[in-house]
Amino acid sequence: MSKNSSREYTPNFVTPILILVVLIASVIGCYYWFKPAPVKTREIQPLTVVHNINRDSTPITIVFSDTTDDGRPMYSILLSDSTGLDSMYPEEIANSLNTGKWQYNEDLRVQ
Image (cartoon, rainbow, N blue to C red):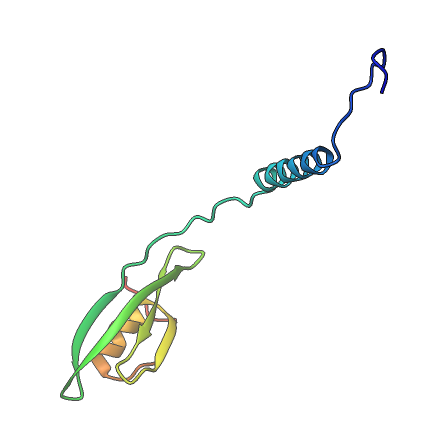
């Protein structure tokens, strides 16, 4: 190159490095721009209730699962024989503990 030339010589290995730096910066920028929102979680503390059913001490695990549109809480029940019942109202649970028969009955309500 001549001394009067306004163009500088760039070695061949610099251009790929610059392209790589720009590419990495673009990927990092896109990651932070399109990063998914954090998921809100809540910790559910299970209650363990021991009740005497059929003259045996049978552990029953009661776990809060959800609330209905009218605000009634619903629970999942796990029995000691690894069977379970999903979405039971507290009144159904109390009736089942009293009778020893696990069954659904949505008409039961505390007045």
